[in-house]
Length: 262
Image 1: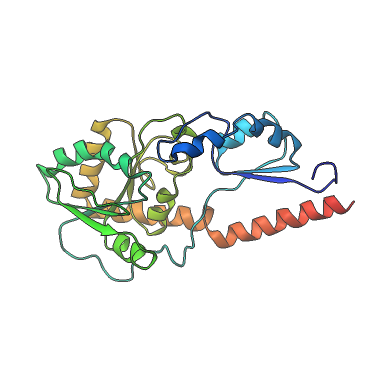
Image 2: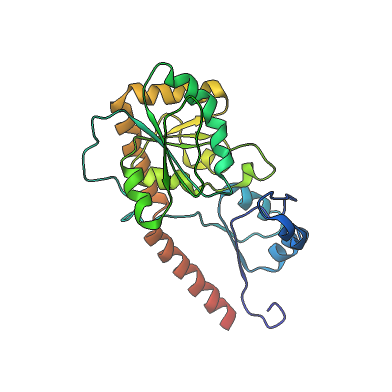
């Protein structure tokens, strides 16, 4: 492609420059070729990076870097029009089988919190999960049921275990929850540091104590949940809206096409 002078746009949303063996991918790890990443950055006319962390790395090899984050359909991921029930609060997590182990990070502080407050922990995922000391409402994931079940929830959590990839990752579930107008508590790593303004549109947590105190604050303060949820929704509509992203991408590809025809 380079020899034929066809414009190359490299769209990267994973830190492939970091040698990391995923326990979920088994033998496919042998097919990874980490060293090609830098060369692909060098020969590309433009690089779309999913967040600033990957963008900063890419700038070492290419000057034309555009930050193109993940997005959500804000007409699908939106707050429920139905008022919240007066039932006990629901703390929610959504994900797939490969990242379900991250949930374990938030379990000890939630166990401690449940000694003082009654709440339900709703998990929308592939594989059933139960935790001693917690009331778990497991919901098998499906496209049709995901949003309604999350809309019924009051608080979203995004726990992330430390790994070689975590500080480079974009966590899609963060903008899922925020698009739904839910206050969240999330591990202070990766794109969460770029998206969440602590105490404004959500909370960041680094220690078990952080998780306990910030979940406790949200459980005890419905008004604060509403305030942070409104700000979270506003953040997603302004910065992570798929319609705006499509307009931006169309503009960039048309620009690259014009340059390629010269």
